[in-house]
Image 1: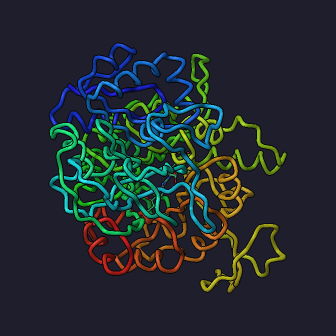
Image 2: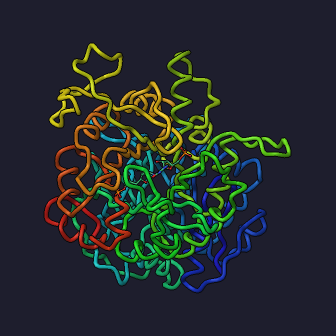
Image 3: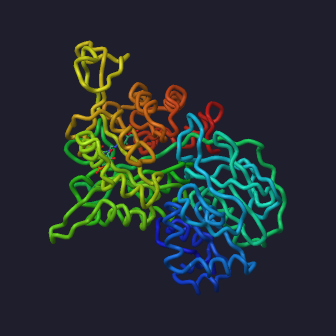
Length: 524
Ligand code: 1PR
């Protein structure tokens, strides 16, 4: 029996799914006595440090947790569940940590570093341990965090990882083991690690052979555009420049859960599910999407992003839902990140009018509660050509792909409602304002390239990537393996996403990774 401490701030569903997948029974700790009586305790922390410590205190979990940690029974902390063990965090200096290990938690800071540190990185193990039995040592694990532990006691450091500089990525001390990364989202390697915690006695182990230095991998993401077809079935579809109909019918490329599972097994580093008609069908009334997410999270142990329809809504009975309510339902159902499309454009339009942050926008609210890493902004831009930069108030690029009348300049216009409506905001400004409001990542689509197999729009991607410090996912247009190498080399983006080539089995995720393996860092 494994007890999982859920303090109610996010996606513990994935940890439960991972432990159940290993054949264990899970009990979710709902009270202090559940914690004290646990045989083995896993503490997955999500959200922000201050929020976590406040909830632990308010729910009177601190004393039982301390008693458990001192009992000598096995404890496994994940992400904030590791940070909580230290004295305090710069993220919330007024909230004390548990202080069972010496040290504190500091924000990543280095010129030119995208924050959060998000994606798959390796570990350099410093102590004998049971945790890595059955692994080769070159595995990568999924990290997503803006803060890291600092300690001057090397005895507690189990592993370090490099991101700009070397930081503590796992700790081990007596009965306590904790990792900064997410084993429940780290594919087969993560499941093995959890199994080792569950099945092998602590303290018994060897020093695994691991690299002295590690590097963050570029991510390959498979995207599933999901909607109801004309028969009423929820299907994966795919547009050609966002037009998903062929001979009047919605293209049907497969079942969402099956496809997501296939991409996970082929080695996708992340899976995105976009409810592309979410702008008109409110997702909390469109429960099949929630069901798809729940089912997917039972089989897919890499990060899941879900988007479509995340906005405020009043239903036909007059009940009001905030975007935060919608996001909360998605997180409870297994999402690690949510993506906001149309609503982000409106939020930015309002910001540009007033130049004020209200604290009330969906981006601000969701990132405050779930952390900025959980908020992705999905941008659907299209090129608008002009003869000269002075012809538009928007930032332009000089393009090597001239417009229909030979124009040499263009700007990238944001659209809403699945590309149906162009707005007076450009993609570069949108990305910058969203970062300011608390977004953690940009998913940069391109209507001109979507479904064309003609390669990513390098000019668009470069313009946005250079304007923000948060990670950028390049999307739209991938037609072969070389397009991925090109976008990583020419733009420096952290991740690249494709849909059509994977759905139509023209290129597999595995083939992309195989092609990239000597060119850029990727997860093996
Ligand atoms: O506006 O918050 O409700 O979110 C709606 C979401 O649905 C947005 O993220 C938007 O990008 C997406 N969306 C809306 N309409 C479409 C459509 O295709 N008609 N999907 C759509 C388009 C593009 C990618 C696609 C890439 C890669 N999204 O999902 O997967 O272009 O394709 P490719 O590799 O085949 O070229 P909201």
